[in-house]
Image 1 (tube, rainbow, N blue to C red):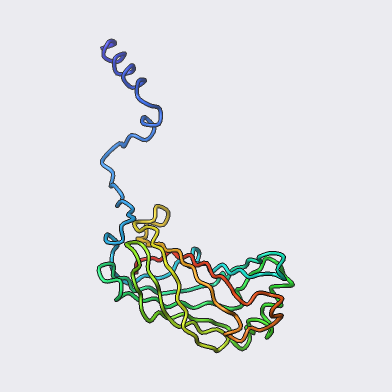
Image 2 (tube, helix red, strand yellow):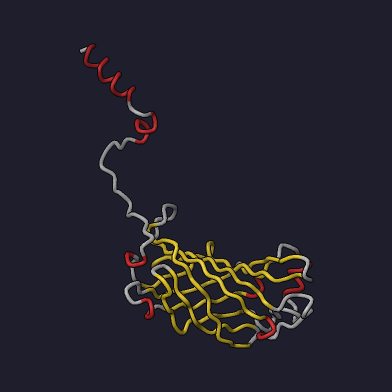
Amino acid sequence: MKRTLALATLLLASLPFSLVLTAPVGAQEVPPALTKDPGQVKAGRYRLDPAHGKITWSLSHLGFSTYYGQFTDVSGDLVLDPKEPGKSSLSVKIVTGSANALNDKLNAHLKTPDFLDVEKFPEATFVSQSIEPTSPTTARVNGTLTLRGVSKPVSFDATFNQAGVNPVDKAYSVGFDGWTVIKRSEFGVNAFLPLLGDEVALRLEGEFKLQ
């Protein structure tokens, strides 16, 4: 008996320490694998995770630097058809008062009629009209952006990141990045042109949860 216990102890000691700690006591469910293959993504209706949906904007500041800020209150709905991406659709709402340039004085100025005029136009929207695949993991999203009451066609390039069960909240999720450039003057935001840049770069990040 002592010899058997000693042999078992020796065998256990030879295992990696991390394996001993994590060895399952019983059968454990294996979580679904994450995928970077768009063809493996679940079709359906998705909703933007507000904690992980941001729009980062940037423009030239007097030619000396590039100034960055974010819209932090963004909501969106995505209808996703991985087999026929052209049948997918996206609609987004942006609370204009959530524009954050990490400076209280500037944030207050952004809310005025010089820029976003948030009292008169509390929301901006984007509604897709068509989605055109440009590679297995990228697409051109064409739609209408409405800002300060002005609606203009805007397109952005989207990149699929991955999909699968989020290890934190256990919800099936899909993630994208996007990129585009708009001219603020086309939406009536003319303050301090041309000292402040007319072209505004928009970087888009979104994690969507299957509903």
